[in-house]
Image (tube, rainbow, N blue to C red; front, side, top):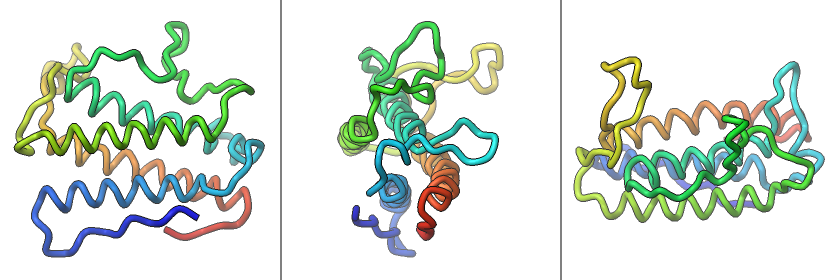
Length: 175
């Protein structure tokens, strides 16, 4: 089973707190996917089309977007680029596997950690403007601080989804 990353000490500085909370939630998502087979990775709960494979693919893409593309300015193509499907990360094919998705997630997490380590301040801004261009108050550069908080929020929300999916698969709860 995948080891759970610890929460940061309650007296850690801001950067350590943000980075370690993000690593904690990253490890929760990986643990939720740990030990399930390909059929289970595609199991859906209720009326939602969301499944564990889609969640892992989505979070790999989110890691890539915020850290490599938006913050560092990489022009690498999206992991699951499909010009006809904006949500291709969620819409996987029968040939897509959880193992490939988890490898992509781990790769993007490693790249993200390197990007964050290279930033000298949490006030560093994205290389590109992000957000909806039709909403000028929400469009523009974002600070690394904002990205880290957003990523914690993104993982926390999706870890909740993963909790429900995993419990439906085999009754596993926790984290």
